[in-house]
Image (cartoon, rainbow over all chains, first blue to last red; front, top):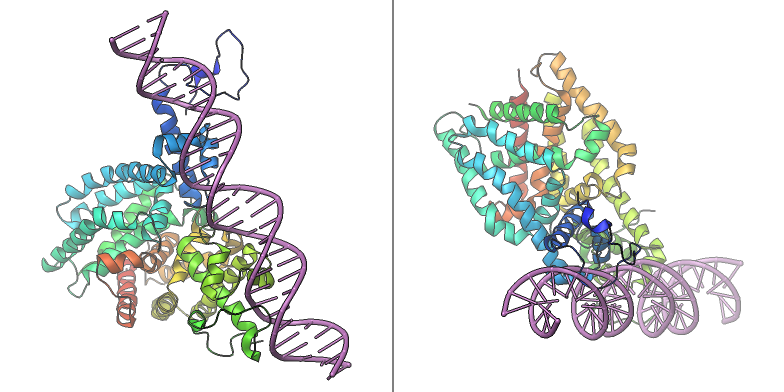
Length: 228
Length: 228
DNA sequence: CAATTAACTAATCGTATGGTTAATTTCGAG
DNA sequence: CTCGAAATTAACCATACGATTAGTTAATTG
């Protein structure tokens, strides 16, 4: 993206080489573009290499601006990071919540939920890694916030759904709802986290055909595994 | 060589009454202990926070020595990191290979394999995170080496075992062996990666009772999920 | 028991990092 | 037209990092 058509054609006077000088740039719609470019660059770099491994200079260079712009728009590195995470999680949650709330029983709605999850992970492949790195890992910067904001509800809701199925006799009654929930999450998320290796070692391409087959496979494996 | 004459308890950290001066310390048992302490500290810190986020000073302080010792024993940061990874992977593989080679069929030997895996992850909780971070993730420093050294064999062996069970009619014949392998790996590893969050959100304690119950749960879930 | 080597600390060096400020240019409202 | 606010760069600062060296003490060796 970001084909700065407007900016690349400098007006007739004193054509400047690419290295710009100080001052507000020409063009009336410059404002939100730099901010967005920083968020995008930050998202890609942070998720690929981790918070500390990426320098402000690198992000700025990638976004085509000066490190001082990060200070201008986000205060500091952590501010950029937080803003980036907020944006990313909001995108994911928007998709997931729809399928989750429309799910009456786990047996019925599981297929839809898996379609949404695998679809999200296929469309934005860097998200699973970001989650693992920043939420689950020991020092994840987003951990506390994630637990307080989302995980608590999710962890209360899904095992309860499993328990409901058990009580109704559709799942085995010796099943531990929390373990079942963990297993489902693991078998769903892990293959996307392991994607870079799996693609090379198993020769699997993560296209739409795979996604669909995988979602179906996971649904069946889980439902038959827990069935009474 | 036997670098750990005395079972490597991580007590190296707690012994430091006097701020020592320069010079070789007394007692003949000093040699391999510092090296081991550095490897241990590096393992814990690197796996919790990532390569770049941990400073040599921090590792040295944790191990109770001076940063120069890292240079002395390992040359540089990358040298310590490589040595630590080698040691960690060797430990895991040593345990896993035994159970894997003694496994005739997947139905029979799966219980043992799961016991070994979950046992390893319980005994050294930082290993799963390290694997995820350094092997699976995009920037993983260990990725290429891991693929060439272990993953290729593993990825050829285990799906073949699944296929064998299918051919013998013990597993469903519409099962994709590679997907089954991925699912099994995911449901086994993920709960240990997510441990910090799971402990808080689900209130699960990762003790021996949990480990045993989880291994059993996983075995059943998988075997019934793939059963014909 | 001297000479050498092993194991260690203290001090330091150059560099890159996160963060800040002052200057500079343009926009937009009055 | 003017002037304040917005948006940007260049230059800078203090700090922490990885790495190295010089020096110190204990153990080993011949």
